[in-house]
Image (cartoon, rainbow, N blue to C red; front, side, top):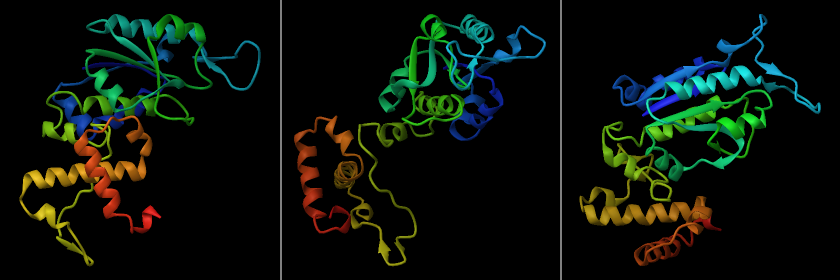
Length: 250
């Protein structure tokens, strides 16, 4: 996967050199390329912002340096890229979107700053707008990194165990089931017996039930978007009945 990043602060993306994304970069499964609009400024003051027409608070990113950076990134892409502007006005990024983006070979992320970018640039240079949530952060860099990380871990060969991506939380539209590791007993709280049984089919069924129940408790909006199979409906009903007396259901 080839990523192009247009940002005034490319140094922020050094965080992607860590962990799974860092390993993917080292193994050349992912390539990050940076274009800084500051390198295309037209005046001696290195200006990268300008006042908005009509007045109002704040500044906008200067048009020409940003446009040149985007166009230069597009020309460098090995194949026709999908150009994404990370913006509060964009569609909500989710696991389904991350999976869809893995079908692209080249992606360009444009990280806005200040009050945003000129609408004409969005219309002329941007293919899609995406957001990571209904809140405002200082710039698009952090949001772009979140999206790059989510996409990268889905690429073939990136995770040590391919099954990890399949079983990730939200991969099937559900939150992940509870997980446990050593010790078997922690301050009086024991690992569920089913996980010690060695019965793989029953463990898989328990995990599905717990994933359904956890999603029902914490993110019922996700269940509302999902059509449950007959087995899933039965398991969810069992979960609700089994936990009817639990304090967190009252």
